[in-house]
Image (tube, rainbow, N blue to C red):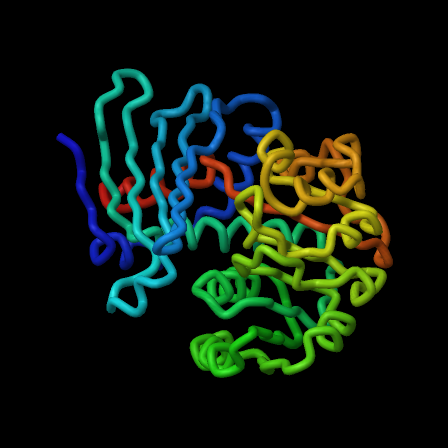
Length: 317
C-alpha cells in the first residue's frame, strides 16, 4: 500500500536529513550515463500567470522512478494561498507499484535546489569567501543561504532584491545563521565586491551585468529554469573561464546557458557537467582569479534523491 505524506508530516523529517552525499552521487551517476531522464514537461499559463514543471526519471539499478509535479502561481499570495504547489510520486522500479505520494507543496523542490546550489558553490567558488551576495527575496533565497552556510565558511552575506522590505525580511528570517548579513541598495556595487553570487529570481531580463563581475567570482544561477527566463547578461558567460551545467542536454534548451548559446556568446564544447566536477573527471576552478558559473536548471535525479530520503526517514530506515 502506498505511503501518503502531506507537508506537515514531511517537514519534521527534513530537519534531520543529510542528502549531500546522495545528491552528489546522483549527479555523478547522471553524468556517467546511468540515469534515464526524459525532457521536462511544462505548462505555462498567462492569466493568471503560472507555470507547471513535470520532471521524471530514474537511476539504473535503483529502487524507484520518480514523477514530480511542481507549480508556481505568484498571484496565489493575494488569495491567501501559497504560490508553490505540487507533489512527488515514487514508484517501484521493478513492478511499477506506487510506493509513496509526497504532497509537499513544492517545498522539496525548493530544498533540493538549495542543496544542489550549495554543493555547486562549494565545488567551484574560491575556498575563502569574503562576501557572498544572494539576489532575490523568495523562499529560494533563504534556502540557498541556509545550505551555503552549512557547507562553507562565509564571512559576510549580502541580500539584494527589488523590494527592499522583502530583502529585510529575508535578513530577519536568516538570523539563526549567526553571520554578518546586510541588505544592499546598490546591486552593481555589491556584485562588484562579492566573490560568490547566487541568483534566485524568476526574471526574464538580465539582472546581473558583465561589467560588474570581477576576476575570481563564482556565480551559481538557480532561477532561470525555462527557455525564456534569464538572470545573467550573456556576456558574463562569454567572459567566464569555467561554465558548468547540471545537465548539458537540458541546459541547451533552458536556463542561462541556453540564452548565451542563442546569442552566440559561448559554444557547447565549453560546457562541463557538475557530475564531472564531483567525480573528478573534469576540472572546475584551477586558479583564484578565474570566473566560474554554475547554471542549475533542476534535474529529476534531485527529486528522486530527496523523495527517497523522505520515504526512508518516515520508514525509520
